[in-house]
Length: 164
Image (cartoon, rainbow, N blue to C red; front, side):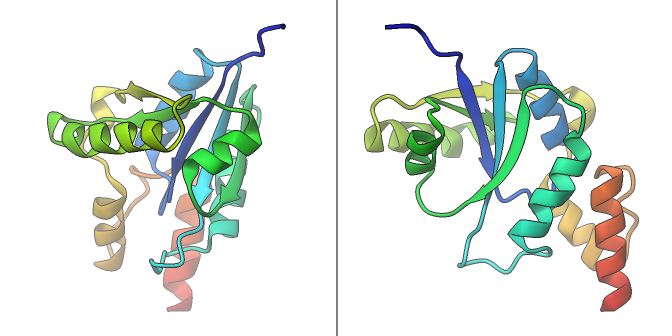
């Protein structure tokens, strides 16, 4: 049996996709030959942008980055991983405060599928203060998010603000 190259899945809502996320994808792409950015379509939340639009914006951001692909999914992450023939879950950790929650999720994913392994990556320290929640709050309050999100996402958020 030949060993298949390891595919890693970086899943999240990415609402919005920010520079911390981009840094994790860049780091992962140097470790894994294939990195799938899996955008969660969560019907329980009302995101700023639809999952399909987030997928397109992230694709635009990652254009030209070898070994990366972007898709949407719903349901259990481990089911998506089986479909995509991946066993590695990527998670970003900004601070110690992220650890307890991320550790619980990693254990639950392994419980749901014993072949799932979680790899934690830390972003460059210049991005440790960025979170989707903070970016959304700044955007909702009319602030400039240009130093927090890639250009395609910034344009989409500005267009959304103009329509509001």
